[in-house]
Length: 153
Figure 1 (cartoon, rainbow, N blue to C red):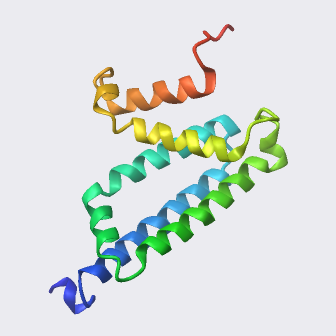
Figure 2: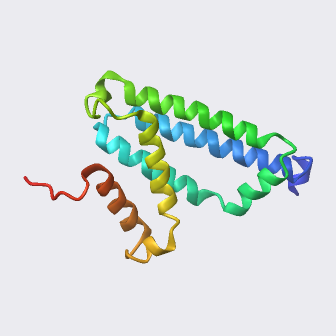
């Protein structure tokens, strides 16, 4: 049995994969927001989720999807990103979460910085400083939340 009995062409396969990845990501996102975990732990899980998302698909897959965009996958991806961004901002602005954030912190800036952390995880120079990618991620998360000041008990 081949894929082409179910799908007309590779673009339809790519669309199904991409839409499935996006929907699975949203389900995981919502399970984090609905969990009983404290806010800081949820943020760590969001960053981990974004990192895992970068590991699930190759750059080649996205490049091909965007180059052969007969199914308007760029548009669907943009719509998904806008929807997920709106949900994340709503999560940040929920009264029980707002208390954790500095009043002058823009949620959009937080999203931007989380994206930068995920970009950094792909940086070979950074990764060479650590024993594992997980170590690099955890160091970036700790730096992001606690800066360079040593925590005192």
